[in-house]
Length: 342
Image 1 (tube, one colour):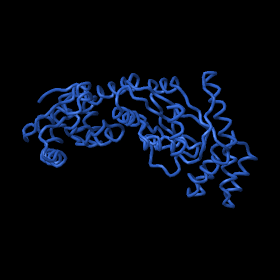
Image 2 (cartoon, rainbow, N blue to C red):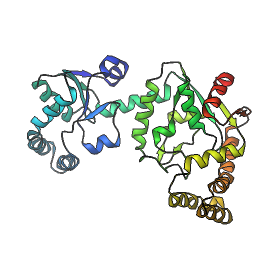
Image 3 (tube, rainbow, N blue to C red):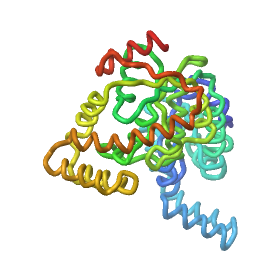
């Protein structure tokens, strides 16, 4: 068995091509996993809890013996799963939480089964430290697309990518559109930890020193927090505000949320009742009841435009004058922005 640091692993594309086996429990893997990691758990969640409790209450020897009881029954399964996942590749990498007994045990077993095995020193914990450091210091120039709700910023970013620009879709990584309505039609959000891993993976694929376009976001996207180190860079990056007629924005909101279940739209409006005001809320709910989504969208913009103005004031006088978009079409808008502000 050979040891491998997180820095060496992440810096070498050839190493990242090897199967990466995460031998932590399924719950640990779900909470946060390294890019491309394959779950190969030595213990399930209950077994991990049992061994951990024994370690704390009785001592390491009792925990070790119980761990051997559990692992012994799984040895064949672990080998077969590893072979199935690795295919014809005979060189693999394993990691656990801190590069301790779990990954060492599985590494020993896989070596007996004919694999050349690398153990990630420091495990997932060391890899996470590397990822957080990278997010704070990645060699990219960030450029931020800003604009009020309904501006279609995400659609414009995706169109920029189709035109060859480098982008990171923060809302796409977070599975949330960043408002009271943001979870509608989205998959469940990842943990904050996993969001950071996904953000690292997205940035890692972009060439060093390249310009990366992102959407202006608050620190919290739904229930996911952007890491402080990265958010500080986002706030400090050059901003390109976009402007367009209110009717374009209303039309986009109607398009984006027109097929959403009315109950979910009502709940989203109700969540912002205090800031929206009872009269505005009733107007929006009555509009939803009669299927008038455009009127409901205009009511929502009353609240969100105030919030955006407050946020823009916080950015200070350094924010440049807004760019008037020539079209509501995302591709035409993206082409214009890349030509004038890119």
